[in-house]
Amino acid sequence: MNTTTQAGRREWIGLGVLASVALLLSLDVSVLYLALPHLSAGLGASASQQLWIMDIYSFMLAGFLVTMGTLGDRIGRRRLLLTGAAAFGVASVVAAYSSSAEMLVVTRALLGVAGATLLPSSMALIRNMFQDGKQLGSAFGIWFSCFMLGMALGPLVGGLLLEHFWWGAAFLLGVPFMVLVLATGRVLLPEYRDASAGRLDLPSVGLSLAAILPVIYGLKDVARNGWHPVPVAAVVLGLVVGAVFVRRQRRLAGPLLDLRLFGNRAFASTLGIMSLGGVVMAGTSLMSTLYLQTVAGLSPLQAGLWLVPQNVAMIAAMSLGPAIARRVRPAYVMAAGLALGAVGMLVQTQVPSAGGTVLVVVGLVLASAGIALPMSLGNTVIMTATPPEKSGSAAALSETSGEFGVAVGVAALGSLGTAVYRSELPDTLPVESVREGIAAAVNAAKDLPEVLDVARAAFTSGLNAVAAVGAVVFLGLSIVTVIALRGYGQAPQPVESEREAELAA
Image 1 (cartoon, helix red, strand yellow):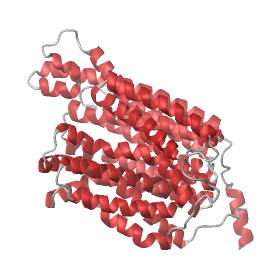
Image 2 (cartoon, helix red, strand yellow):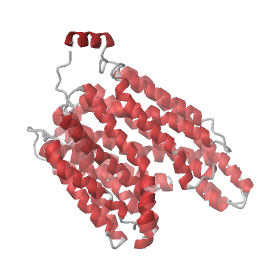
Image 3 (spheres, helix red, strand yellow):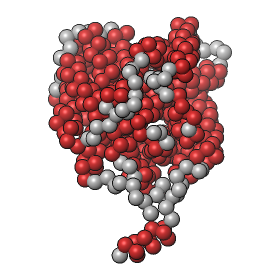
Image 4 (cartoon, one colour):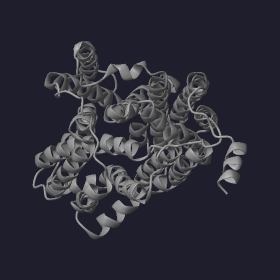
């Protein structure tokens, strides 16, 4: 019989506060995509400045996650969360009233640093607030569902805001959320820190930034411009510095990142499974979105509406996963989800170059519902497999691996799709720029339907190839999940639950 302390009303209300943070952070990103043309016109931002306005946030977020997760373990997770919320609110106001593109780039960087304090602190606090395994799974399911809800609502909210207000309203949207956190955090959220943790090792902080930032930059540049010496050199530099960082952590008594976490099989396996799943979904989502707009010829709004079922399926599966895991071992639920994701990928291997919109969306719905199950349960596995005093570090690693998964997926699978696209084009083309990519083909050959049809067929072959790789990866991950995690978590037996209920009565 479970004697673990059950969370009460205070903890569940506190979860609502933390879930609002997740909702904001995802909403903030998706709203900005719509606001970019408006703020670019208002500030006179060049194409390069527009890229930095978008990318600097994710650069700083990814770079500081490990540092902030460990810092929260040392100074207190609630303290770091409230500090980050205050900083995020102030930076949001400054961003909204930026008078130049350069000023907005700087404030976006500050927002990224502040965001890095909010994500791991929120996850670590959830781990502290919900000691019961079933409640913890439900809590993480709710938190991630709110994150996905923000992604789904972003275009709608952004459209309403930009129809009635100026572009700065997209940044002011976050201020009420941060005020809510600051007003209720001290009352609803517990404080927790590792009393035995030493001082923050500043050289390790510098090394972690010097390792993560070049890799993220290089992968993003590869995804945008292809393989060139500069991004490749950046990735190599980041990996070399990363090796130096790991070597230093092994020697420190109080490391910035405790590498002993990877000695836990459940932790390491789940982190790897979720990272590779993120790689597949990022690459597939990129190719699918491009297909809807360039092959199917849908407008951005129409494409966005076709993607709504994908988000709904993911939110529903995230909420359903913890409930299923109460009766079925988490490993089997996660494996079943990955197998479902493989089916979704197989559906996309059959997408034709004409009339394939429904198949693309069906494949995305199945894949999204499938990956949502290991996502919702995987973080519970990661956090429960970690000592409570290291929860911040574990949460930071989970979020950092997610950032890397997206970057690698877009770069690697996007490059695969482009390679297949180019290989499928005939040697002689009346418009040579068609070889640059499907977007260039649509612009260059819009008055040459026969060339455009060839380009669309070639791109569809690239989508099919990426989906085939995704199906193989998902199926392999499903098998690995059963092998690596089958001993983790014993699902309660219905007979025992009924017997306990009779005794209690």
